[in-house]
Length: 409
Picture 1 (cartoon, rainbow, N blue to C red):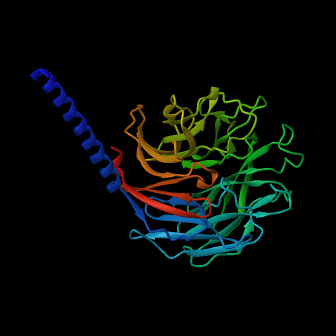
Picture 2: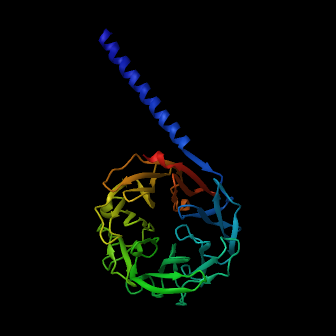
Picture 3: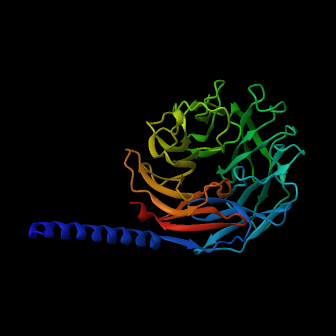
């Protein structure tokens, strides 16, 4: 071997060693960046939901007691640790589902949450029961039904967010017109209402008379008022993401956030997520238009009246199940699930309004099954929090992790 050949070989070997060390260094850095928080839940817990008002972090979840009984619980993160689990309610006639799960929200010491209770033996006949606390969760008032139609049909996929001084804005999928089935003549509605701190429900209104059957809804409060985003449904079975805004007391005619033109003859069970900061609104969603799975995010600078061209976050292997948080008027974090050879991963990426994307961070590996649910993302100050279902063939347990916001730069 010539000296030149030896030099080339040594250079190549050194390059391989350097690359390996850099990869190991990066992997070690990610492990150190992602810190797991001891969960307040126990075995057979599922369906975590995270809520943040910028200062405090709450988590609600369901706990399986036995084959028929479930409880609704919550905890607050205090000085980096979860408070002891508080049981809000329990029942043996609840509808407990991987995609349609309880939520929680806080406003000025008032906490609102919900669970789904069967109204009839039919599989998809259940009501949204609200439960309210006026003293930060120390005591809970008697639960009450959100809607008043009285039909033995599906009501669910509710979004609860703080609204005005001490009230809550709610939007949900309402099946009062589906008594004959989920066909064109009996479509699911999108409805919205306000729940006062007294428990009184006001301003119940129809937002859209025909929506996708079982995708999660999302909402946020902009300077102009509430907006709702959801998966719509046209007569031609186009199921893209639509937005409606409450302006001057009326809901605007729904319009697409973007025309993906995804035609699908069934619900993909994969709803959008919205977040707002000042006049900036952003929406993240999953689509598989033309057979190509994608996760997109779109920004609006005028509270949702117009949207810029979507920015593609992931493709091909994406499962969807997105969440989003706005950091400021120009930057957002998006989380989603992506399939791997052995299951799936939760990924989070920082995206800028100008289309710049940082390197995605893998939060964890998990099952790709429905049991993994919909991972939750929240940001408080300089810390990112995530919660998800960690499932095996026999058990489930909620896990929570925190990551420094600087890890996404």
